[in-house]
Length: 194
Image (cartoon, helix red, strand yellow):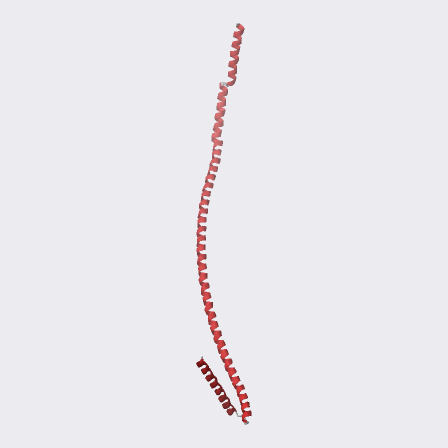
């Protein structure tokens, strides 16, 4: 049994040594704690403030960007509202200008119509005067031609010379008066017959 007992004791010793391998020695724990505290103090004093500064700066930039985005969005909304207002004003002014143009166009058309009518009346009056002048000129010319023909014919019929201008004038006037009286009597009797 001594061999069994020594084997059990050896197994217990080796089991204790195996667990001791996993548990560090007390001086290792102390030195590790000191190093950990030194690293923690250095990290807390120097590295953590830099991280915090970088994080604060990023937070500030993000918040500034959000504020700028909100400001830009508000400005865009205000610009959009102003654009819509200007567009409405432009539409209103365009409608007003169209109405003014229509009224002005109607006035121009009326003015041109009146002017054309005045021009037509003036041209018609001028034409009437010209026709009357030409008629009178034709009448005078016809009178002179008829007078000379009548004088010539009367001279041949009467056998007497009617070269005297006063005599010629009286004969022509009498002849034309007779013609006009015949025409007037003919027109009057035709008017009464109808």
